[in-house]
Amino acid sequence: MKGYYFNIPAEELDEAISRTEIWSHLRNKRILITGGTGFFGRWILASILRANDTLNLKLTATIITRSPAGFIEAFPEAEASCFTFKYGDLRYTLLPVDNYSHVMHLATDSIADRPEEHLGLADSVIIGTRRVLDHVANCCPQAKVLYVSSGSIYGAMPEGVIKTPEQHTAAPPPESPDSFMSTSKRMAEQLCSIYSRTRGLDIKIARCFSFAGAHMPMQSYFAFGNFVHDAIEGQTIEVKGDGTPIRAYMYAGDLTAWLWTILDKGQDCRPYNVGSDQALSLQQLATTVASLIQPDCKVKIAAHSTDAPPSCYIPDIRRAREELGLSIWTNLQTCIIRTAHWYKNFGGSGIKSKINSPRTYVVDIDGVIANVVPNNDYTQSTPRQHNIDKINKLYNAGNKIILFTARGYTTGIDWREVTEQQMLDWGVKYHELHLGKPAGDIYIDDRMVPLELFTLQLE
Image: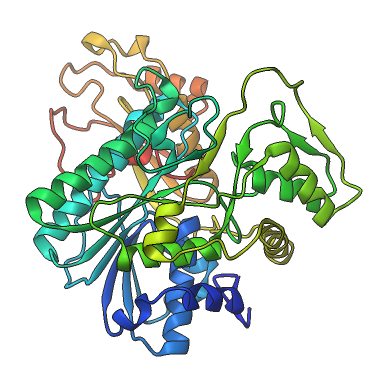
């Protein structure tokens, strides 16, 4: 759409661009961005494209993402000559070598519903960060690096503490299953400190809190997006819990300026809180959203309030204000109106799931579709339903599914009838079943997708 970059209005990008001094340092530079197709990444890419158009920077960016084809299909402007998209998972993929002047490590997964995903996501944060830092140390050690961390690393605040300063030393309890991502990001920050000391890298850390704006999830885990969605759709705004948690939301345009400024001017390994400090309860947020978008919209509080102190997730941003000259330029009301405008115009449009050309997927059965059993007694096999669901998605999207197994290769036992019945009972959709794969301890293939990566795809 004319006047938009990745569905973000040009005038909003101009605001973000005008609030940072980095652009004069980026002329003719090359930048490496991981996670460049997510919520944060889309704003960063849009700001690059707009800055190139208005300031003639000739800045180029290489973007590492798990979904390059779908992103380019959804946003044709991504094919601009200043962008090069590379498919990759940071745990496995070799990163492209170039003389990058800046590196933005935005690829930090935040949410996992299923406990079986926790180890893979923790690896994506910790191992992914280490591999990015290794690459910078070996490829472009003079580059400025930005690591996007999270305010969740602080853990719960003591009673009476509303705003969290960077000096706060508490941490999420490691014994809590809910702490795995926060603890992983804390470890990633430790890696940044190690690489700064031992390899001399210049690494900036942004601890990000809560945000809103174009491209935020509108029907997910985030109260702001859910409230805006419900109001626009004329539904009752449902506040889970008692509505007392205290939150604050920074507009994504402000966030963009903050991230660029921290990358440019932040001190090495000195973390900066990123977010708004204009606090309000979730109940207040819901009523404000309703009043601005649909005054007749009802607000429903799911639970009665208790005497327990409310949870607070608010950053103390004095460090960023005083050291970097940053501010909250966009107030909450404008943030809500702009987010609603984006949703009304683009319907929450994101990456399309269409597949341009069907592919053939060869899938091993044991260890992927079926749990491995002792002594190769396949009559005792049980399904791995999460992976079966993903294979069925690939099938339904028009891809060809070939199942391949080493069952019986060594013993000579014919397991076809048992295997076919299991696939039928477990609801596995496929086109061909091949028995006879040689049994081995390690398989090497240039087109192999590791199981950990497969379980993260198609979310």
